[in-house]
Length: 200
Image (cartoon, rainbow, N blue to C red; front, side):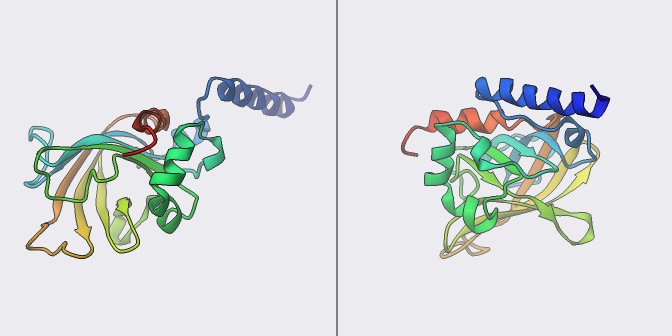
């Protein structure tokens, strides 16, 4: 059998085996691509975040991929959770072509929209001057948008709550710091979504 044919057959068998275990397969070649692809430990702070500060707004995990993944590849019950409870983020912004996900936990008395969506599928895209952005909360009239830069293995930037009642005075911009801890691992978000249950 030709080498290329054997490689294709091998990848198909890997996907079948992985699907049987309820896991999502990521193409290894894309995981080795240049940043920002990776899994990050993320902190959202009112004051500037850095590795030594304590996040007083929200903490969690952010996963960025260099390729789109199909919603159909996500096992139940996580897929139903994303489709039902995070539909605005998935459909309005990601257009059913997500390439990122996140899990966030708000701190006490957090005055921000970050973490309103505890777990979601989203889409990152390039921004001017080498930055990148992705929403972490979305409804028809409100949201939480981010703008960060890659600095070594870190993402550094800011997040903004917007919508009715979210003025600069009432909800000021947040500081975001995320440190890369490994390759893209969507299973982190899939497990979190499955644990959310039928209601938030």
